[in-house]
Amino acid sequence: MSADTRASDPAGAGEFPRAFYTIIRTIDRFSDVTGKLIALTMLFLVVTISYEVVMRYGFNAPTIWVYESSFMANGAAFMLGCGYALHKGAHVRTDIYWENYSERTKGIVDMISYILLFYPVMITFMLVSFDAALHSYDTGERSQESVWRVIMWPFRATIPLSAALLMIQGVSEVLKCWYQIQFGREFEHKEKIEI
Image (cartoon, rainbow, N blue to C red; front, side, top):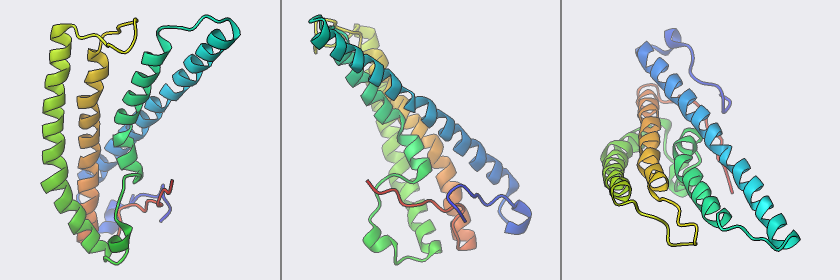
């Protein structure tokens, strides 16, 4: 199968529930759309940093807001893009062992990892970071990086939101693992992304 081809024939797949196909497709579509929307943040970065360069070096009038807005936008995009990266198969994997496993074994290892490691860590991460974002909101926390002193709670709120987006995509990945265990083949083939 190609990278974009999904197992779209529920009738030919045997016992895999039709509702699971719908859930997988819906979540994958949601992650794809949110990832592409989050990527638009990079346009904001290009425009604001270009503006800063022109103002600073062309008119000797540096801004006080570009530095903080750019690192916050970049940090937020990096965190919020994690669910999209999971959907595209862009997270790190130890290929030296992974390539030797059968498809069924890969599904078992992935499912155990999601259930025993991924979800407990993500739930804890989301709860702790949500508490930190609430505390930031309640105290009116402001940045100490520049004289702009921007409020911090919107930036801090991206952390639990990113954990939620990652867990949503995790549901789709667990169902894909179940498919892989049941049928001994990938639900969809993801090309390795090398950087």
